[in-house]
Amino acid sequence: MFEKLGNLKNLMKHAGQMGQRMKEAHDALGDKRVEASVGAGLVSVTANGRGELIEVTIDPELLKPEERETLQELLLSAVNETGRKARELAKAEMSNLTGGLDIGQILGSS
Image (cartoon, rainbow, N blue to C red):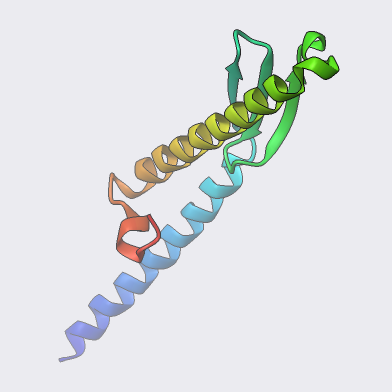
């Protein structure tokens, strides 16, 4: 009967260690960078691994009033692509940490 308590204690210990490693991995994602460039390099967006935008670069040719719609479309596209890349990076990092186990799917957040 008390053997199960030992297993539970061991499980809780490992869960705490996993939680700490996941926090460290999440923190480390802030130091990683992903970039998306669209429109043959006219617009580039850089974000960290948590999806927070770091930098936006716009070719001066797109700053002309007649290029407003093109700029808006390219900027939106670059931001969305950078977000997708950041999510992929985060998923890969967490997958490495959990040995391929999709924690998000288990928790219902994927």
